[in-house]
Length: 132
Picture 1 (cartoon, rainbow, N blue to C red):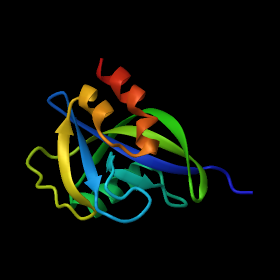
Picture 2 (picture 1 turned 90 degrees about the horizontal axis):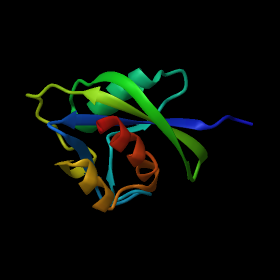
Picture 3 (picture 1 turned 90 degrees about the vertical axis):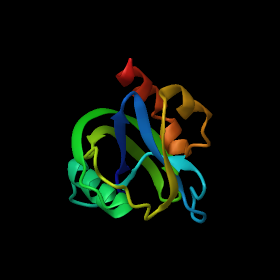
Picture 4 (picture 1 turned 45 degrees about the vertical axis):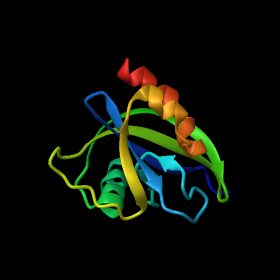
């Protein structure tokens, strides 16, 4: 039996606000807000997955900084671990919306009020604690 799958969530913090994207329609999390990121591919390290996902989703170079914690969730493919990493992107970077209809910079308090993907909701406490 295979072990748990692993996904990463890139937490970009700027001026006390966190970057989130609203998924385009379709798929399991269509129209929900989420942190940038996705599945860690076989043989890939978290840091490599972060760089790849930010390039795929926004066309931007991302620098993984630190793992702030993990959460658990289940999806169609089974149980997964979601690793929340703080990530730095260039201030001047223009984010291309390749998988999202829009992005927003929101406060930790406002995160609670968003219609956010369940997997990401499980790591909100990690972000709050990190930003205290």
